[in-house]
Amino acid sequence: VAVQAEAARATALAMDALRGAGRAPSPWAGIPISVKDLFDQEGVPTRAGAAVLAEAPPAAGTAPAVARLQRAGFVVLGRTNMVEFAFSGLGVNPHFGTPLSPYDRATGRLPGGSSSGAAVAVADGMGLGALGSDTGGSCRVPAALCGIVGYKPTARQVPLAGVLPLSPSLDSIGPLANTVGCCAVLHALMAGAESAAPPVPRPVAGLRLGIPEGTFLFEGLEPAVAAAFDRAVARLRDAGAFIERFALPELGDIPVANAAGGFAAAESYAWHRGLIERAGAGYDPRILSRIRRGAAISAADYQALVQARARIIAAAAPRLAPYDAVLCPTAALTPPPLSAVAEEAEYNRINLLLLRNTAAFNFLDGCSISLPCHAPGEAPVGLMLSRMGGGDAALFQAAASVEAALAG
Image (cartoon, rainbow, N blue to C red; front, side, top):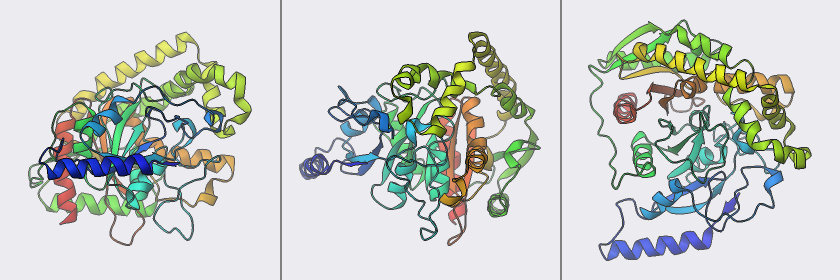
């Protein structure tokens, strides 16, 4: 939605000069990236894909996640399109246009959301990485639908300051890139590390991978998704990985806890209610209706949700603990045609199928990564690896090993 050509050119020239003098701030200096239009950049308006923020004043400061990458010498090329206020997994934006998945552009297919432009920018080679946010899958779903890698870290590892919120209880700041290693480096730097290095892939022999069977994670899968997932699992097993199916009944409690709208509805309404009173007519009606669900959530309901989440996390954690990662498809569908979501009922159904699996691990306060597992020429399918919160380094190591095994 904005190309920062002059600033990007100046930064690139400066990084070239520093490299030539042996004074580059990091090995990554000069690498081009993009920033989702949810992050503050000093002197630039933050519009969050919303027409009602079209006249927003320039930001007074830069979000720490962006500033840390800039200090390492990354070149910000511009700001990427997104779902209005980050509240959908489809990638549709009626105000500024919908970027299309690189797969089957002639048909015009959904890119996934809400970090839609971020994923398309990486997939199309406009930059080598992108900053996104992930509240229910907004890095991983577009990564899956665009055939790249997307990471949702343990929440709070990367500061949320200077980022327009959707649901502070669930919001995470994550990278999108072409490889697990690139995501690992971007995440480490955004999380405050002084230096970073991609994990070195190891043989998957001995890697312990769990598959939560009998759960909604495997319901309603498009045949192409199920086939790609099964093929990836078979390949990992043949390479020596220990793969075990296990019960995770706590997943079934999540939809019950979220029945009234969950954290996203309650917390987004708290932020938006004043703006809705002043400018509600300018919202995307489909986003507005989801935010307004929060008006009906009482303080008692919200506290019950907080308590239910804590119970579910406490019960699920020991079930996931024996595994280096748990596996499932990132999304139940390959990229649907844009025309498929014209009607309200299909919009809601497809949105749920795209976000269902990813959102479970936001609720569990986990860390999670999507990497491609489809064959060349096939529709993109994401393989999701997840752990409980705090296991980011171990998850990156497992993901790098899985990525190498699938590529080999």
